[in-house]
Image (spheres, helix red, strand yellow):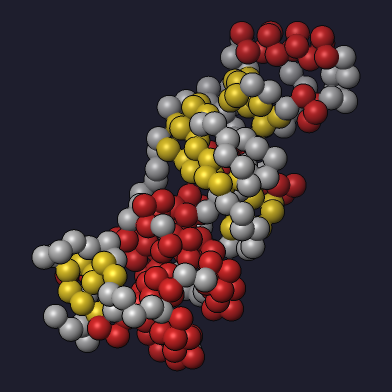
Length: 244
């Protein structure tokens, strides 16, 4: 077989197969002999003959499922090496429209609609990846912990972070403009980063936070109040200056 991209559509190899009939013949032959696999209609993956597995990673697959597909949340945290677990059966990717789920090799790829185009890093030409910055991945995950493996997974990622660009964090917070998100981010950053983050950041988060006490990944009877941030948090994740 000629040198092929590890993921391809007809347009990717049109120069090699300018005649659509010859391309279809190529597909039938190589799908049958197991040299390529179909991910969805029109998208194919090259198989490693040594392992019998496709060369492409789940990250690369997700970024080819739609024209503007990219990923954030737990998938981005995992990509940056800050996750304790891998979502082996489900991958959430982002697009500007909803796209039907794609199932490939026991992994379900589900789209989540997003109108935000900030902090997207396009490495499609280099390694076939389109991913948000770590800062956006953290803010997105705190905004929707369910897409990030839960609060414990987020806190592990924060502990593992060496450097975050606070200006990028502020850009995301300003874009989403949610009082509850300011509360959560302020609380978690103060807990995990303390004085390494400027006090002005915490003051801004406090000024943008609402006055309503919110339950943050906790339940009545199993939570403690962080009075400063007006958050009810799980007891095992409490801060030293918590108020019961």
